Length: 501
Image (cartoon, rainbow, N blue to C red; front, top):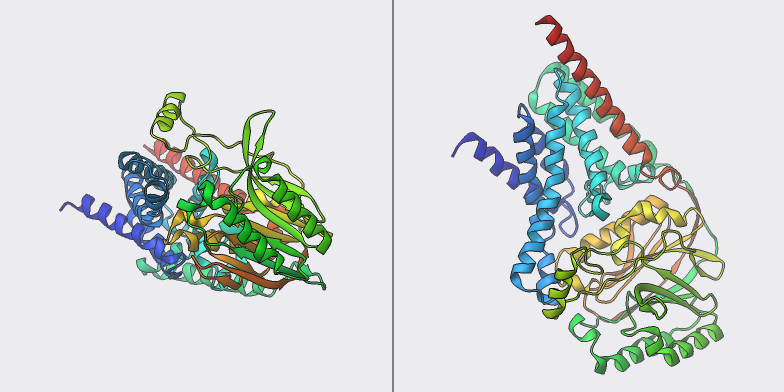
């Protein structure tokens, strides 16, 4: 086998290692090792070959890290195998493109200063492209590097720079590993100095607290019905489902808040209006706020929305803003949509909610809501902050089956709590329903696929972390600055070579 093919194979294997750093495996130490291996493979490569190596690495990351798409599309969605293969390969290739872009860009920026390139340029390129991956073409921030570090001290950087701030620290560690492999005295000193700075910064940030706990806790309950997806929307299942939620809710007493999962009510509001009216009246009489997921329909415009509805003392509606491509809307030509209908596949578009919406309320406590996939987008949640004192996420993770995806999803919810310094309440249909404290630590859960009620006392938080105030701007601007300096240095160096020759 040629050296080129061996290098690409190693890149693929290194990419396959990276998902093991995330939940549920949580081998967080693999993250800098996997990335350092990629940095090493990029050394002395042309921009084209560096891009190919990055593509192989990215293919490894997402072929293992998002294999659960098969469950969503085929086993539960019922899509034909050719469609499933096409969509899965399309996503993996698209995500691999971002890694290819990293390889191409860092090779273009390569100068005659390998120490600075390894320690700073490579991490800056990594984080900038990772940030781009989080919003280009609606974004897919799954498996962003920072999520892997939630259970070790590096998590402290998330309060300052969000998930990408932590990604930057991991990429810096990968750069340090790369430099240490070279084993030159000058570079070793620089790498150790970088480690000392990272360690000192981590130690300082761990001792900081930017939010303040409110003294009076909220008594909350989260209901996990564990209804299989293949039964959820059957008309004969509607009444048993409504009765289940009603019975479990009415059995709870002296609660400030009860949360049902995403689309907990398997009907449109006008189809179950007597039920909604009854529950609303009961919640008002008890002084209990209820949040429930439901698919709503605008009779004037014919638009469907994925909604979180507030019933009880504070009526309110939140409509999901960031929808899932090919899950909640279909960015395809009309003839493809028609084909999907002929194949009895999902084809109706859900309309996104407004970018700016009012928070929901529990008494006087403002709440920042998200629905399912939205919890992956920390920057979008900031529109409710610092006003909101509590985070709520509802989801229907039954679409993921018994895979690694629900664990990855919970990991992202934990990051949102840590970034904002707010507790997170996460109610799901089949799990993982969880209460997460303001430090991003899971305090209680209900096991997957097990029906149950999770009750807890939760303390809202006020104030603002640096991430809430500034968002991703500091990390992105720092990365751009490093890349700009490197580009200018390379340009001047090439100009000097031309003049000499």
